[in-house]
Amino acid sequence: MKHLFKPEVIKGVWSLLILLLVIKMAWFAVEMLWLPTVGVEHSEERGVKALYYRVKLSPNDAMAPTTKKRPVAGSIKDIKLLAVYNASDVTVVTVQYKRTTKVLAKGEAINGFVLEGAGSNYATFRKNAKTYQINLIVSTKDSGSIKSAQPSATSASSENQVEGEIVDAGDHKIVDRSLLDHYAKNMDDIYKNIGIREIKKGKDLEGFSISFIRKGSPFAKLGIQRGDVIKAINGQKIDSYNAAFEVYKNISNIDNLTLVIQRGKEEMELEYEVN
Image (cartoon, rainbow, N blue to C red; front, side):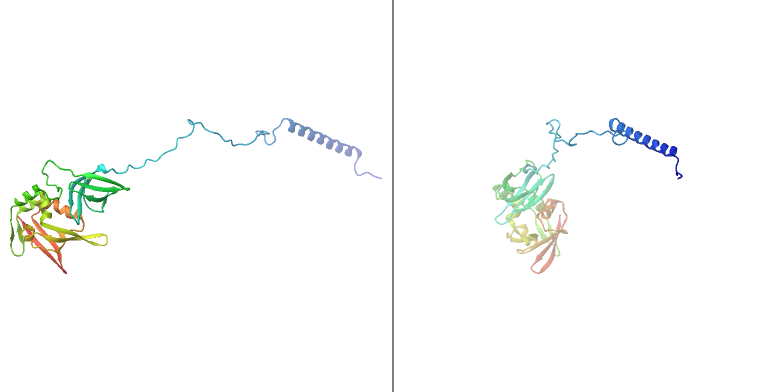
């Protein structure tokens, strides 16, 4: 019987397989003892636990919490009381806040302080359930500013010293400037001769109504009557105390005056010339 392979060939193949097996086993032993598990530069630490640890920082190491600066709330000391008018039905004050002059009626607020009431030389405000009182600033100089509108012997005597006439010129009236100068410096005399009350629609102030006029006073000669509603003065709509105060401040500097009033259902204009 003839063999397919020579015995020498089979013996050589077996020798080669045994040699490869020995080399493989030797390489496995070297890999387990000296070489890294994966790759050339990889090393594995065995028996290592958590990667994250709870660390308690000392007060010096801890970062200080950032605090937001709260805006400083306005102070009642920032508000100055320049004028007071306090009647049985109307309380009005003039205040100055941050170089701005404003007229407030009872219930109105400035810088969060709500006007509650007033006396002869002070006003009371409320904020956050606390009550504050501001005293009237009395200037030593005669600057023509509005002062306390309360009856006094001084104001009564000044009323008797009012000079100047109002002349009817037909389509308009001529007002002596000395009258305007006097009333610009003596607001007390205004409210002794004429009374006003607010006209509101809901909470909105729409104008001022004349509640009385003293007979024989200069105001009675202007042609206005009890019950008239003042709508505008020289084109300035009178729907707030600030608007009325602006007219009052500049009354000494005007040469002509146009008064728009509502009398009953009729709206009319009254013209005045100042000289």
